[in-house]
Image 1 (cartoon, rainbow, N blue to C red):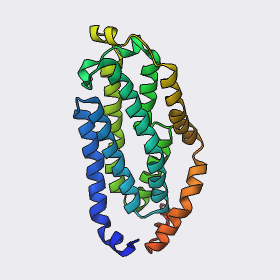
Image 2: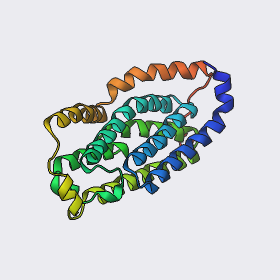
Image 3: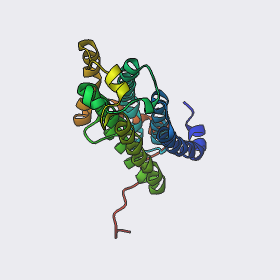
Length: 236
């Protein structure tokens, strides 16, 4: 809508996006509340979306729009899995969980897959969009892409650390008391389509990419921007 203003504000927006990526990830690592931790992961992911928009490449814009689609599914999956845990335990504190996978293995598996989608594991839809954002940003400014890539490393820290604290090890007394049943049929029915979408578009992202790429091209034309020319080493 405002292409000239977008170009003018791009440097500030890129910096804010990087702050969001790192701040959200560090907030998730330091959080002791399960729901607050998931919320911080969204802040980090929103940073990738904003970065993709203001990097002004067709690739990054495509990745950003794709990210908007699959982020809804990956965060929904993580919130649902966290909700199942909290409902059973009656607490949102990460310290109140432990050894859950020994008592409810299906719930632990669903929580793990949801978390792996949040950290953009290859094979999940979030990986495709995050890669497109970083690849498009790299072609415009490698240093910015390098800083943003740190968010991917930090996401592995907070997801795997959370899984270790809540799911692994021997079941605690409170875990054995509260986690007497695994996922119900209704809970599994809720999770299957959400995780299914993430896996399907992780391996076959082309339908969504083909849908949003023309919009990215039009947006680039409206902003009077063009993709950087590819650089071949040794060619002047």
